[in-house]
Image (cartoon, rainbow, N blue to C red):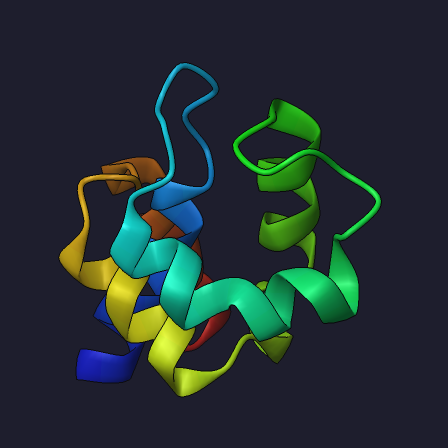
Length: 85
């Protein structure tokens, strides 16, 4: 359940186009970003969409950082929960 909430938070963090990416998220998600979304600018809507599309492949540390940040939305968390019931 906690992993689900964290994953949802990660998805949400990546959903806001006007939000800057925190240093904690950058640090925790750098390998995920490099592996899946490096063709997109960090913090861009395209980058956030790419990370959302790869949410099931993100590392535990990235998910945790996103969950602790204010960079995800409640809608993304709810989507993640529905996907993992």
